[in-house]
Length: 285
Image (cartoon, one colour):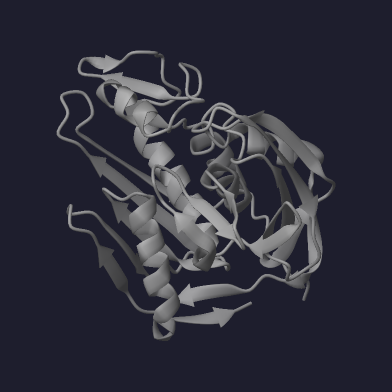
């Protein structure tokens, strides 16, 4: 019996070049997403150094996910990885020029659109998943957590945020894997920040490529640069980041993942723990 397309590995049909500026560095940045053979996974390539997009190559989680190897680093990989995750791209070689992945409009929208425009190639080998059969919960000192449990339907994620803020108190969103739900409901969600944090970010050398088009700026009375793309755009962006960081596990999951008041540091802590707990899942095609 022939397998359904979604069970087969996938890559991009042809190279995809995307240019822009880093959202944190503000410097020029370029990526080329290249097709890759089955079982390659997602590989980054910069300055002649190649390494897989896996959690053991994460070198920093300060307001973004930075990966690196042999002294070469690439900042803010999560939006691009989220697009690859959301569209089911298993294999690609991502060539990078510059310190950071292009920030574009602060979301995964253009990455997803460009991949769909160039096309996705279904490959000959079946996709390998880790099906979760047990549970794991990882917490931080601020009351946030990421947890995973079985999901009979494939992959789903729930993300919730909570702030002591007059405008942004609580938001929650759910997602089930599927190209159209990602493209329409997750990919367009832009990064966000609180107005009072901007000076502090800039002082730390962050957010230098941010502007009113690629970030939702939240003041005490609401969004200062609206309208937003979604009523709950901040939590959808948190979900976007979660999906991108989960790509660093190196294998798609069949599971339900729930994240509450989480960020890149907790995502990475969770992935490291999951890699140690092989008994709560089994690899299957």
